[in-house]
Every structure is written in C-alpha cells, then in structure tokens.
Image (cartoon, rainbow, N blue to C red; front, side):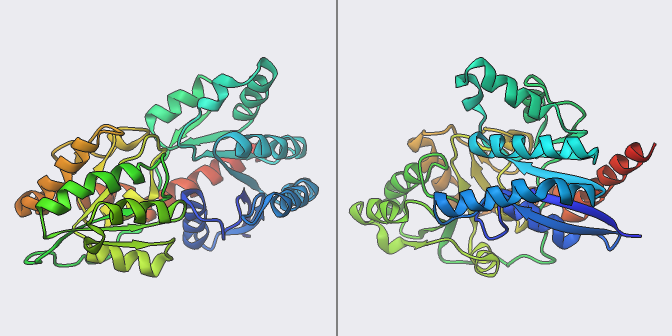
Amino acid sequence: MKRRILMVGPALSVRGGMTSVAIAIIDNLSDEFEVEFLPTYVEGGKLRAGLVFLSAMRRIKRLARKSDVVHIHFSKKGSTFRKAALAKFVKATGTPLLLHSHSSSYGFYDELPDYGKHRVREFLGSGDRFIALSESWGAHYAEKGARNISVLPNPVVIPDDVANRSGRETVTTVFMGAMGDRKGAFDLAEAFIPVAKSRPNARLIMAGNGEVDRVRNILRDGGVFGQTEIYDWVGPDERDKLLRQADAFILPSYNEGLPMAMLEAIGYGLPPIVTPVGGIPEVIKDGVNGLLVEPGDKEAISAAITRLVDNAEQRAAMGIAVRKTAEDYDIKKYIKTIESLYQELISNNAS
C-alpha cells in the first residue's frame, strides 16, 4: 500500500530554492510514496495569493486526515505565519507533521512583540520532526522552540559528466539567483568592472529574477557590458547549459540557508566564490574547494574572481575538490533520508 504524503508550500511554479527542493523530492521519491501538493502561495499579486491561501485553509484538515504524513515547507515572515495557521489544523487531525525550514534569515523574530514570538515558537515546536539545512541553522531554530531536529542540507542532482574546461580562451564566472541586495548582485556587478577592464578574457554571466535592469545598467555604465551576458530567470535546461559554459560560480550573498544555486553549480564541478553565511561554510572551505569572501567586500570579490581567472590550475583543483564535495549532497542519499523520516513518523504514529 502506498503511503500518502501531503506536501505544503508555495506553488510549484513559484521561482526559488524552496520550490526546487519540493520538486526534487516529488520527482525522486520511490513508488512507495504518493504525494499530493497543496499550494499556499502564488506569484501574481496579493489578491491572487490571498485566494490561494484561503483555499489551502479550507482544504488542509480534510487532506491531512487522508494522509500518512504532512510535510510543510516554510521560510521567514509571512511564510512562517501562513504555515503556522495551517499547522494548527494539521495537529488537530493527529497526522504526523514534518516541518522543513528554508529561511535565509530569521531576524524578523527578534522584532516581534511577545505574542508574535509566542506564535512562532509554538509553530516551530509543533513539528513531530523538524528539518534544518545546517548545524548552525538547527541550533538557531532549537533556541526558538524547534524540537526533534534533523540536519538535512539541500540536495543536488549530480550530472554524470561535466564539461571539459581546459584550453578555453575566456574564463566565465556565473551567478544565478534573485538580483537584489540580499544575494549581492549589485556588489558583484560593481566588483566585476575592474576585473573586466584588466582581464579581457574575463566574462560574467548573471541569470535570475529581480532588479535585472539595474544590474545591466551598472555594467553598461562601467563600460564592460560587452564582457557579460545578463538573463532573466532561466529554466532547468537553460540553467544546465549555462553551468556547462561556465568556469566558476559566484554568489556573494548577505544571508542564506543553503543555496540551491551553489549546490547545482558544485555538482557541475564549478569552484564557487561565496560568502560564509548560513550553511555555506559547512560546505565550502576557503582555498580548498572554493573561495570565501565577506558580504559587501567588493575588493575581495574582485580579487577572488581575478584569482580564478588567472590560475587555471587552481580552478581545476578546486573544481575537482568541490565536485567530490557535491557527492555528499547527492539527491539519491537525500531521498533515502527523507523516506526514512517519513517511515519513522508513520511508525511512531501507528504505535
């Protein structure tokens, strides 16, 4: 008999890492499990999003009763409070609840009044199991009431082969993510200008949603737009094509959970330039399988890109090392852990 999993989160059309993880789980679970997905948020305006959430509120209790496990994905602020409301309905049914955190920051909690903090702590503690993306995030949530925490970093689908990058005339660094302050997109654009002017063989690809035109204008005003390719959000096929074209990956974020874009890049053997925030320093060791720079340090970002542009041997060595690192996050291992958590919750509920 198949086990029924009710998965709850933003609609699978919503762009972002949380959706990528949900899709990866749905696509790779064994035939032993059957997933029904309940969307709680959609893009396209507050009215449309509100109607979707109200629909989820009406349906959650009925669907939870028919399920063996309810798996709720959440992040910060509005996502936390939406899922807190839904979790109360789930708990009323007695169906085991798995909470899965994806937040890049949780500072909003400290600004809440006491009753708001109580609501968040009640929600975080309501899960029969709680998934955190890293040891540091696990400790963070434990302080706020989460219990039965399992540390489970995001997964990556590792391609069978990677591009042969030796002998390329240009060295391409790729960024993928929301173009805004949090991901350091503007810092990167400004930091690339002196690199491009001193290194004609340096090239930058940036792809994502957000303030894409602002990024284009920074690079155009800096006189280096000809050494860049700027895309809006790309789908999986185009993403993989760009990763194969690239020689290094960069994501100079100010805060993160454990970015899917970085994991996808290391699966392709791209040495990353990233910041030591969230779960990243538990994966990337400076000078070994990538380079770490402080958020907002444009000179350090420029220096890191220059270092990888100028040193083919270091790029290759870090690429080999980080591809090995990626094996620890292979989707196959990840799915085994998820399925074990489901089985544990089902067994505990039965007993």
